[in-house]
Image 1: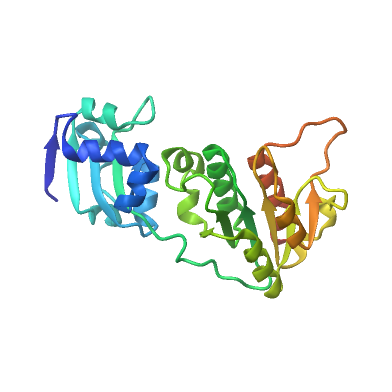
Image 2 (image 1 turned 30 degrees about the vertical axis):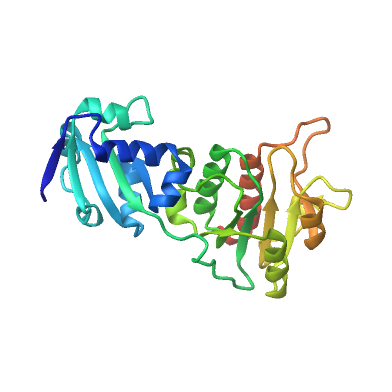
Length: 268
C-alpha cells in the first residue's frame, strides 16, 4: 500500500471530495459519492461499492490498524493533515476517515418481486433525515425492497447516509419514475398495495393483515401526503390509530410503525 501525503487544503483530491459532498449534480456527473467515518466507509466498501480513494489522518491510520480487505482494494490512499480533515468533515468531531466510492445505478438494479414479499414505497419525501431514518429502519426489519420516487432526496447525500447509518448498503432500493405504474405492476404480481393516508375508507393499521402475506405500503410527502390519483391506484388505505386531537406522525416514525407491523408475524 502506497500512501500519498496531503497537507494542503487546496489539493485537487480534497477539493473534489468537498464538491462531491456538497453537490448532487457533481455526484451524478462524476458517478461517485463520499463517506465520512470508519463505520460508514467500511460498510460501503464491504457492501460491494468500489472504493476510489481512502483519506485518513495519521492518528486514524494508527488507530484503525489492519484495514478490511475491500478497503485495501482502494485505488488511492492518502494520509491527510488534521487541517485537511477539518475541511473535508461534515461532523464536528471527525474520526479522520473519508472515502470516495463509485455509485451503483439504483434505476437499473430492480427489486426482486415475490408474491409473499414486503415492500415500502416512498413518494416525494422532502427531508433527507427522514429518508435516511426510514432506510435504516427498513434494513433492521428486513423489508424485501424499497421503491422511491425520483423527486425524493438524493440517496447518497451526506445527510441521508448519516441518518441511514449504513442502511442504504443493506437495504435493496430502487428509484422509480412512475409510482402509479409501479402500484399497478405490483398488483398484477399478486402484491396488495396500500396507501398510508387519512382517508374516509382507511382501515386501522393492525386490521389490514399486513403480516399475513405479500404487501406494499406507500408513505407520502411530509406536508401533502400521497396524491389522490396514486391513492386511487391502490387496493386500499391504512392509518395508524392515534389519540383524538393528535397531530399526524413524522414520516419516518409512521414508516417505522408500518414496517414493524409488516414484519410482526415473521418475528419469533
